[in-house]
Image (cartoon, rainbow, N blue to C red):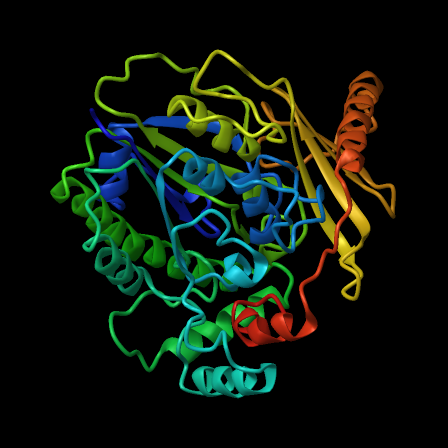
Length: 432
């Protein structure tokens, strides 16, 4: 009996429009794309990791079931669904927001999050360790080269041909600070970090933007090498042909297009329109509409259905590998949060269909409407010119907000000492 494998490769902060596959800049991704379905209209449910990944893993919207800071018990993850069906489940990453402290280990037989050295320390001890790391300019995450070594070291001890496997690998190299990727120790690294830190505190600056874009593309070129190494590993292990391989971002990144950098709580397409490609097993012949609207809540049920694994009842997404389609996709952002309770004080929502994009901010009541066909970069606000479209979008948004309200409320924050354990790493990544 042929065993099945799902290999989910995710990249933090990867811009769709920077991932040019028509030239030779990213040869390994270009090769993978040539064997894959490359989808053109995929939207993250949120502009940053916490919200985006809660939807990828649980097929629910970020603010449902206790919010996006931690995976609550009310949410079943895709890893849990696979594990309950007898699959082996492996997770590898170094993003502190996706650590076991926030319950992202749910359902994984093996879970590596690069927190093992300090996770048992008190908040004050870990604070000191991370201060030392920052002084000597060690990164807040594992670069792709080192993460791959962790992946191979663990998988080498498992027979991947004898079991069904769900394997998730998340790379952080496209996330700022962009180091321009020098191999080994680089004396220039502090300057790259200072440049990026300056950017996230500044408004758009053409000179700064050009330098950041160059650094970012160099990070992607570096990453391409090690994604190729990962793919080659699965070929050598003899599981590539029968595997579904998903390559995607959790969200994008901004380079001053709307006056800001990095990925703040905004909902423009440089932040929420993401790359997604899927390589299916060789015998798969079904044709899929590559232009259909897809939300990241759709990924988990699509993979589970394809693998004939029961889809949890609370999953909200569609199976986009089938003939199902979305008329609208919905995203949300928190413009202000009460850090004591995790409650969303101010929110922003966006709604996209095959032509229009509507953005609404709850506190200011600001509304924007863009024609994505004639204005894909969202420059001209048409909210005052199309009252009939505005009414349609407002009604549909009300339906989504009612759906959000149906999610049961639970405790939103973990214990304070757990939060303190990762604060320094988050500072290095620009979150604090």
